[in-house]
Amino acid sequence: GAGVSQSPRYKVAKRGQDVALRCDPISGHVSLFWYQQALGQGPEFLTYFQNEAQLDKSGLPSDRFFAERPEGSVSTLKIQRTQQEDSAVYLCASSPPPTGKAQNTIYFGEGSWLTVV
Amino acid sequence: AQTVTQSQPEMSVQEAETVTLSCTYDTSENNYYLFWYKQPPSRQMILVIRQEAYKQQNATENRFSVNFQKAAKSFSLKISDSQLGDTAMYFCAFTPGGDKLTFGTGTRLAVRP
Image (cartoon, rainbow over all chains, first blue to last red):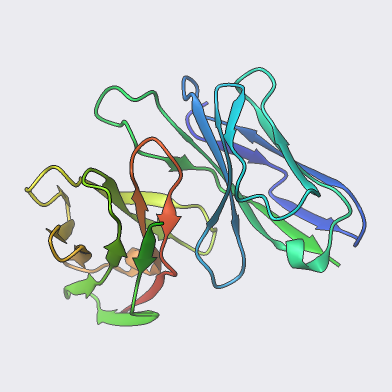
């Protein structure tokens, strides 16, 4: 696709419910990132994939958060037993291979807005 | 660890005027990349401008330009001929390269008609 695509755009979950957020990166982009943005804050890094390998998951706030990218393309961020503090916008981003003019430039999707009630 | 500081929570500018948004950062890296992203109410992060630290020349993109001062670790964004559509949150971000971005806390810019 032309840009990073995320779904669902909006999700309301009851506390304790599991949710899954999907990200479809720009075609050909090997790197994929998940960020969490709470209201009034800047995005905070969650995790990073290069192809199917999860190279950095240091930002995942707890073991209730899990991300995967099994075929090196689409990624899913799963949050188990959601809590109110999980309410945020979850931004997915991708970047091209480290060659060419656009290297090291990260492109974002529109985000998935999660509200836990 | 890298940190990015935006000291202006809110800014306001008259339409057609010029405004400068401040950003400072801290890193021990010698080569890195700096970005300004715009985030409208839709919450999508839109890339405004990009600067490689090894380039002395300041980046420009139409009405947007930066003042990159490597020694001072400063990376300000200048918006010329401000337009109503420039109203948004603006985030400064840093990466050492090919890796995760570290964002500032953002500056809310309002363009007045």
